[in-house]
Amino acid sequence: MSEPLIIEAIEVGALVDRVKQFRQDGYRLVQISATRLPEQVQVTYSFEREDRLANLRLHLPAAEAKLPSISGVFWCAFLYENELHDLFNIAVAGIAVDFHGKFYHTAVKFPFGTSTSPAPSPKTASPSPSPAAPTAKPTPATDPKPAAAAAS
Amino acid sequence: MARTIIPFGPQHPVLPEPVHLDLVVEDEVVVEARPSIGFIHRGLEKLVEKKDFQEFVYVAERVCGICSFIHGQTYCQAIEEIMQIPVPPRAHYLRTVWGELSRIHSHLLWLGLMADGVGFESLFMHSWRVRESVLKIIEATTGGRVIFGTCKVGGVRRDITADQFSEIRKQLDKIEKDTREITNVFLTDSSVKDRLVGVGVLSKQDAYDLGCVGPMLRASGVAQDTRKLGYAAFKDLAVEPITRSEGDSFARCAVRCDEIFQSIDLIRRAIDRMPEGEIAVKVTGNPNGEFMARTEQPRGEVVYHVQANGTKNLQRFRVRTPTFANLPAMVKTLQGCDLADVPVLVLTIDPCISCTER
Image 1 (cartoon, helix red, strand yellow):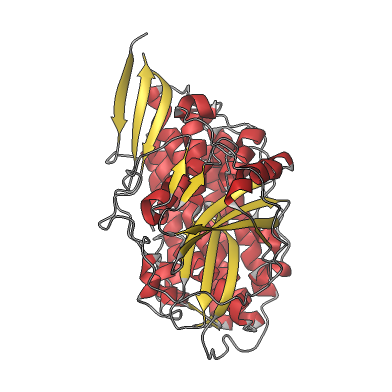
Image 2: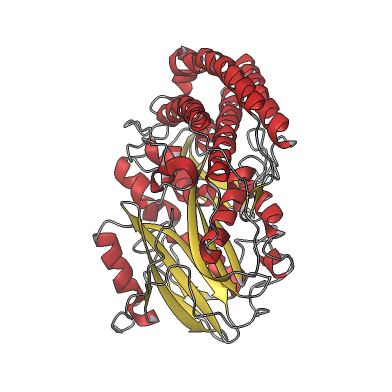
């Protein structure tokens, strides 16, 4: 079994609109992960529909990493976004349920806040990246909502 | 009506591991649940900077103390994809046998915890008695009970002999018979049904939208099972997801009951078709690339995102565990429930905080 790794490069400003498109197309949010690079933070959003995995990838400057929340589109994203903040020091604006840095009780603040590994290799196991999506205007994040209201 | 906040956990009789909920209640109805995790976050993902990619199999196995084998297997699959390692067919089948044994013992463990949660102590003991038979098979074939240590990059460390397979078949017959007696009680006894039927209903759409996985998702009618992707021996062994449409706690229990028998059937089929040959290949060099491996844990889909840059240490290891994915649904099902049903609803996602706090 070799599931193709489909990665679509995207700009931060186009994120929320692209995620809305995934939602409209019937995808579910699988996970959000981040990788600390020497000067950047790489963030990968994974979606799935009918056993097909699709990924969005963007890069943020490590110094002041900021993202809009997608929890207004996929409410369950609030867990991943709190994780991005607590482990990678990424400021995510408008998380539906924001733990304000209290999601993980880590001994070291922002344990992935600094890079200890060399730059990544461009080689991938199943390289099939799509062309970068067109850049759109930044989309404002949704307002924070209490858990009960947002989930109901 | 005045609202009261009742703390639930992080230490609670139904919780073997720490998770906390602030339950906002009106009278005895929960109107909102605010989860808190992270009390024992272990930082295993960071450990990849210290352990080389082959040693890290041991760390991956220790993400969870129940479904440990499949964690190791998923990690190995990710590395093997990156390095294009031709894993021997027999190793794929052996991994499948051990993975399904893990699912059986995990589900029996959950059935016991659920019986304990609803106050049916004898049923709890019987569930764990049968589980012990599964653990004995695992111990006989791997040397471990919950941490197997048999999976490695390139294959497996141990083989199972023909005599052992013969004994496993005999044991499976007994386990199947004993499990049938137990699940009949779970699915027909009024004292169990009274606590589970109609409690914590999650619609098909909500289950999908909230990113649920595993029995939590399938009990709401979504036929999603990562084994359908065909990893390991599942490319030869067809798996039809077990679903229910009710979406309540009883449906989640019923799905797990049926999945035990499905796993027993899968093990029998895997033994029938067990290929001869090597169980591992030699691995040389370091991985360079990226892969996202997905497998079906007892609690649902687990995702391993591995990035390697040609050195012995991986650049990034990230695991999204099934319990993490099911937490939003737990919060959702708690809204509007009776306070007395909170322990049952927390249990029905089969929470594994060890996984979540990897």
